[in-house]
Structure formats: structure tokens, C-alpha cells
Amino acid sequence: MTHVAVLPGDGIGPEVAAEAIRVLDAFGIEHSEHAFGGNAILAEGTPLPDDTLAACKAADAVLLAAVGLPELEGKPVRPEQGLLRLRKELGAYANLRPARGDGVDMMIVRELVGGLYFGEKGIREDGTWFDTCEYTRPEVERIARCGFEIAKSRGGRLTSVDKVNVMQTSRLWRDVVTAMGASLYPEVELDHALVDSFAMTIVQAPETIDTVVTENTFGDILSDIAAAVTGGLGLAASASLSDDGPGIFEPVHGSAPQLAGRGIANPAAMLRSVALMLQHGLGRPADAAVLEHAVDVALAEAPTPDLGGTSTTRDAGAAVLRALGAARTL
Ligand code: NAD
Ligand code: IPM
Ligand code: MN
Image (tube, rainbow, N blue to C red; front, top):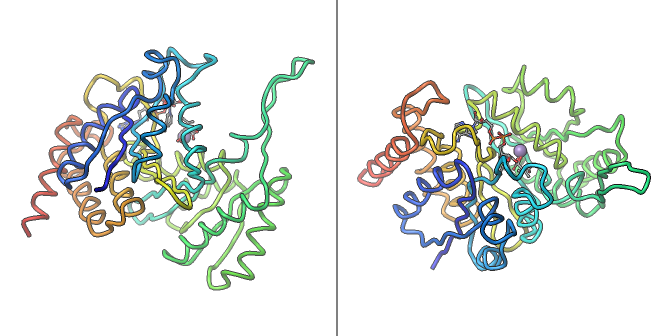
């Protein structure tokens, strides 16, 4: 029996997770909810309690909404540390962040458990605070392989994004991607871009982009930009995959504290993450396509305020369930 561990988290997380749970029920998928993030810190002193981690490891997939509480920002123990640890513990190194919209269909493949996020960091005796960007060759090879495979399954074009004019790790990145392209993926059309000007390309010519592979921090920033040019963070979903074991499926957005408690967050990013879970985590691509379509129907029928509409989170979720029901009676 398929089992999904649901981590509602903080802020708008529980509000959009409630709609995801209704969709899981509609598909007959068993699930359980677990404490995670800021609420877990306040209740248990840690953002990733042991029983939550154990439940995630035992599940077929993890469905995560969002973490982050303003009152914990800058504190020694923070919700975001739980998210980074969960990704690391599950080995979820390949983060797929699709962005679709008017004539735009791009896929950002973000390295998720290395780079600047996980390099050595701290405060030296002389008072200098530091973070370091670190990658090993195998870490770059496995994410590059993922980028090439995804590009092959889509439009056949891959852009590798780095900062080779400045960063040492980018030299490794570019060498590895170039060598793998020549020896293993000659059929994929490969090009390289520097991250600063590529940010501009996402804004000015997003329709020219197919598949992108990039470092953790670059991917974090570029995926919010890609979301912004395709309808906003309310729509952007992601899948974080490992080579074995459960993946983590989560919106690109965070806990949006200004929207929390108002019942007006857009649940589309969360529900598209459920679709990515059906496709990449549970081996149910046909159901994924049905849900993707139902979300598109609901977006047109019941838009939330971020899209210029007046629907609540619940209204939008109900529209998705109606569209799913209609699809099933066909
Ligand atoms: P955010 O993504 O939470 O929100 C930025 C803005 O995007 C919001 O103010 C809102 O206008 C819009 N938005 C986001 N989600 C939306 C939705 N579903 N519907 C409609 N509009 C939406 O980014 P932030 O405000 O910079 O961060 C808030 C907190 O979230 C921080 O604590 C941060 O660390 C955390 N965060 C968590 C995750 C995660 O859990 N994966 C991701 C990003 C940020
Ligand atoms: C994201 C978020 C996280 C990240 C934070 C909350 C740790 O911004 O998933 O994009 O930086 O990876
Ligand atoms: Mn982010």
C-alpha cells in the first residue's frame, strides 16, 4: 500500500496542505501528517523531530508544504535547518523546478545537497563570518547526468549555468558537463551560460529556454525568477529526487507570512507538487496528467487573488476536485 508522509509546516503551509490531502483522498492514497519546521521548534525544540524523519524515510514519498516563522528568523535553531537536513538525510540531490506559461516551458534542474548551502561555514577567530562553496566531481557528475537525461526526455537542449569567470567550483562544473556532453550525450544540444546574464535571459526571453542544470544557490534564485515570469510563486512546484528512496515534493514558495491565516493562498503550486509526486515518486504518470489538467481548469475557473481573482484557497481546491471528478466520469 502506497503511503505518503505529509509535512504541512508553517504559515500558509497547512492551508495549502489541506487541499493536497483532499486530492490524496480523491486518489485513494494513504497518508499521515508529521510535525516539521517552526511549529516543531516551538513544541519540541527541533525543526525535524526523530519520529518525523523516521516516517519520511519509511514513506514512499514526502509531501512538504512550507516552513518558516518570522519570529525564528536569525535564531540559532531555525525551521529552514530542518528542510536542509531532510533533503540531505534523504539524499534528494536532484531538484526539478518546472516553469510553464504563455509559450514558456522550461525545467530548472537544481543541485540540492551541495554547494554554498552545505560547504564549511562559521566564524573565524578574527571575527570573519564565512560560507564556502564546495563540490566533488561525483556530486557534479550525478546532477549533470540528471540534467542530460531530463533534457533528452524534453526538447533535447541543455543549458548549464555557472560563474566560470569567477568561481573555482564553476570550473569543475563546466569541465564535467562538457566532458559528459561529448562522451555520453552527443545527441543533447549543450550550451553554457553565466548566471548573471542568464537571469536576464529568463526575464527577457524565457521561451528560448528548455532544460537548465545549475548549482544549488544559483538554482534557488533562478527558480524564483522563472516562477515570476510564469505567473508567480503560487504556481511553481518542485520534485527533489534521490537515486533510491523517497523523494520530497514541495512548492517553490515558502510560508508567505503575510498571507498566512487569511485562507487566500494559491494551492496550485502545492497541487502541482502532488502531480510531480504521482509522476516521479509513485509511478502514476496517467494520474499525474489528469491532476495537472484539473489544476489548469481550476486556475481558469477559480483564480485566487495572486492571479487577480477572488477565490479562497478552499474554493480553488474545490474547483480542482470538481475537475478531477469530471475527468473520472469521462
Ligand atoms: P515566500 O515564498 O514565502 O513568499 C514570497 C511572496 O510570494 C509572498 O509574500 C506572496 O506574495 C507570494 N506567494 C508565495 N506563495 C504563494 C501562494 N501559495 N499563493 C499566493 N502567493 C504566494 O518567500 P519569503 O516571504 O521570502 O519567505 C517566507 C518564509 O518562508 C521564510 O521564513 C523563508 O525561509 C521560508 N521559505 C521556505 C521555503 C520552503 O519551505 N520550501 C521556500 C522559500 C522560503
Ligand atoms: C527553497 C527555499 C529553501 C532553499 C530555504 C527555505 C532553505 O528557498 O526551497 O527554494 O533555499 O532551498
Ligand atoms: Mn527558494
